[in-house]
Length: 304
Image (cartoon, rainbow, N blue to C red; front, side, top):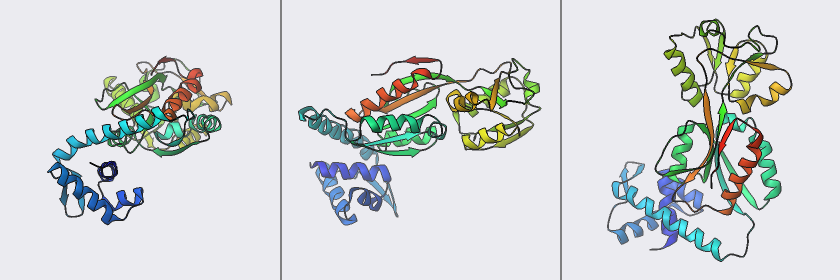
């Protein structure tokens, strides 16, 4: 059983497409097709269900994928264990949320690249569910997201730190700096909210429903930069993770306020796949995140 065939199988499983897998690996599509056929002949099973142009893992294929990832993990572990190079290198595929990308991630990565210039990063943005799925499929090496603690058998949380998701308004807004206002007072304002599949938006909706309150005026915007700008312009109020508000608070553009019954907290988490070999680049990335976030948020629990 050849490792190059195993690697091609994993890529086809990631993309659910032979031509995209071939492009990613730098092969002709016919080569990928031949490699998969050889693998299926060796195993004596069909690894994919082929319906028209759509390719999906068969039941046996899903079972074999776990073993295939374990084989690559052992290959990477063996290569690193005998290598004399103790400097992180190679490609690091990172998945992050938009709110992370718009706040501390750029300066964090600047420090990381300065310290480990031999690492090449591929950064993807997505929702929490999208990042979970891409990590489970092996498309990403590591993800940095904001979520409630969730157990997924295939994934390992290696770092977590609790953050608040406070309400805020323009510095000259009547609610700026107010404490424990009634929910009914909040609902008199125009609320700038993220999309419904966002975790802290879901927490806001759940709390609002539990309190028997109703949002009267809402603007739904997926981009935290736009939400922050519109709120700074006194067009309404909003809530975002505390790390996203640090600069605007320091510059005096906004002020926080609190609402009775609302205490939204989420964990900034770094996760990787349990079956994936943890490279030196991944380890150093987690250490960089922990060091950089030491002054952020409110609570942490260590990883590694």
